[in-house]
Length: 202
Image 1 (spheres, helix red, strand yellow):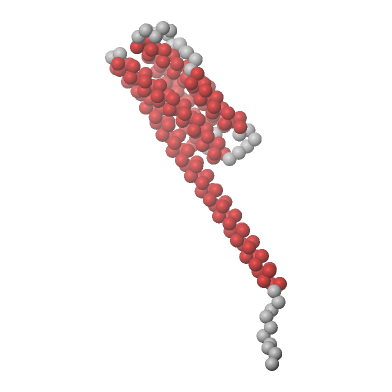
Image 2 (cartoon, rainbow, N blue to C red; image 1 turned 135 degrees about the horizontal axis):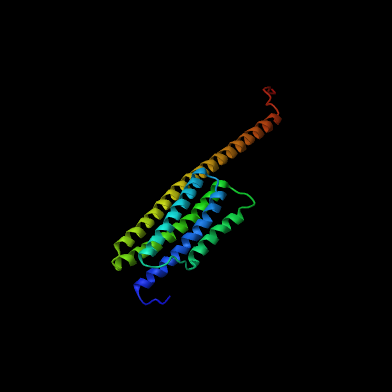
C-alpha cells in the first residue's frame, strides 16, 4: 500500500493490529494451558473472549471505512509471542510453578503494552481525520488492554509475594535445623570432656 495520506496509514496500521489480534487468539489457549494459577487461567481465558470482541470491533471499523477486513503480517507481535513461547519450551523439564506463571504474565504484558501503543496511535489518527466514532471504538479497546494489564500486574504481585514468603520460610527452617545441629554437636562434645576434680592436694 502506498503511503500517500493519513487515511492509507490508518488502514495499514489497522491491518497490522488486525493480524496481531488473530495471532493472540491462537496463543492465549496455549498460555492458559501452561499456567498453574487458577486466577491466571481465568484471566487469560477471559481476555481471549475480550480479544475476539476486539477483532469484531476492528471489522466494524473496516466497514465504516468501506474497507474489507484484511490482515497484514504483524512481525512485532510474532516476535513477542515467539519470545513468550521460548519460556514454555525451556520449562518442559519442570520448575517453580509460581515463577513460570510470573514469566507467562511478563510475556502477556508485553503483548498488552504493544497493543496499547498501537491502539493509542490509531485513535490519534482517527481523531486527526475527524472520525470521532472510530476514535471512540479504538479508545475502548485501548482501555480494555490497560485493564487487562492491571489485572495481570495484580496477579503477578500475589504470586511473587507468595513465592518470597515460601522462600523465607524455607530459609528460616534451614537456619533452625543448622542451629539445632550445632547445639547437638556442642552437647556431644561437652559430654566427652572429663569432669573437673573437686579434690585438692595439700
